[in-house]
Length: 242
Ligand SMILES: NC(=O)c1ccc[n+]([C@@H]2O[C@H](COP(=O)([O-])OP(=O)(O)OC[C@H]3O[C@@H](n4cnc5c(N)ncnc54)[C@H](OP(=O)(O)O)[C@@H]3O)[C@@H](O)[C@H]2O)c1
Image 1 (spheres, rainbow, N blue to C red):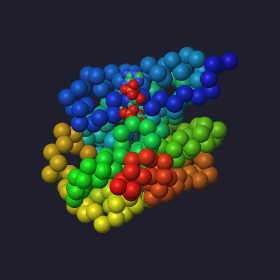
Image 2: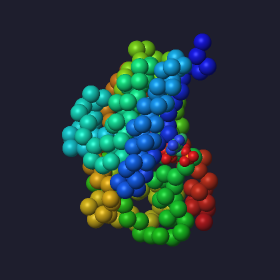
Image 3: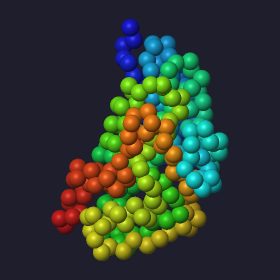
């Protein structure tokens, strides 16, 4: 008997810009480490969900990405995550690569908390890029979907899991502001102006039809995710009441 039914590998080197200069460390965690975890699970007979990313795509398709669309990462983080997918799938166990995107949740840093932090410090007007489109996904909604996926059959090798709907980071920031500090101006910026060390895909929406078929439902819309997150985020209440 295995000592667990399922492992979920969320560990990663996730800072895309720092990854450009910390390539060895990034690759050791996202590729070698991913393969090691998958091999350990395979030895013990433990099924594995390996978390991966929309950043394995270049964003040039102009339509939501399917699981079998060719990958073409634009930055080293994406390259390392693609290698991690390959190593996890080659480890010989029961592995599902779960690609997700633009996560926000109560633990750790995320875009929503960054916007709330700027509002709290009075750093307005906000300036946010409007030429990157994705589906911001609330981690609780993702976790609930993964629990449902754990009992779904057949077990897919790769599945896309993200919120319904899509928006730019600018639209997302506007939605945050409307909910906590209406009236604050949100200015649009182009990604090129930001001079990020890592290139980013301009349109990396994931097609989630396979997941919906497997678990019998879509993930909630990103706006529902945002409302649910703000209801449990203490900083949102602080910004509203300031
Ligand atoms: N955030 C997103 O928007 C996003 C989008 C698409 C896909 N993903 C994927 O989703 C997963 C989770 O992302 P996240 O944003 O939640 O990441 P995160 O907040 O950066 O957390 C990464 C976790 O990995 C752990 N970790 C890093 N290096 C490790 C090592 N060598 N050994 C053990 N643990 C290590 C970190 O531990 P410490 O806290 O101890 O450092 C941390 O708990 C990742 O696979 C990521 O690629 C994330």
